[in-house]
Image 1 (cartoon, rainbow, N blue to C red):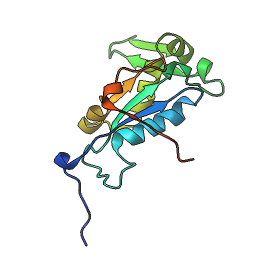
Image 2: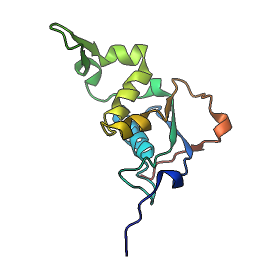
Image 3: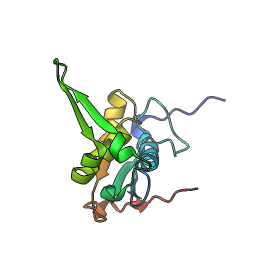
Image 4: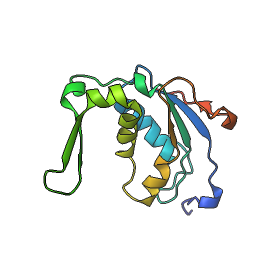
Length: 144
């Protein structure tokens, strides 16, 4: 018996809503990355983009446990001498909480064209309202 390999034309995409309120940032990012990659489907194929669209609401209410707000930094470098920029996660969570969620999910996806195509299907919102009601998204319930 041969293994099933999905084709890009056979992929059916659904829309899911994940609520990040009062949940750890990393735990929510794992769920979102799994949905974006399509690993929750029985037709998952590693080299085909099988994932679904994911709407993340209440990104501003996600929590960081422990001392991560003070001790964790987001670092970028321009490539020039002295070009290191560090931003504390306390600042990121207060000013741009969507960026913290985007960075967490992006780090869990592939570092190639497939990962770049998957991150585009994630829609982030700070509040509980989103603008994708016309797509009739389903609420994703954890199976824990």
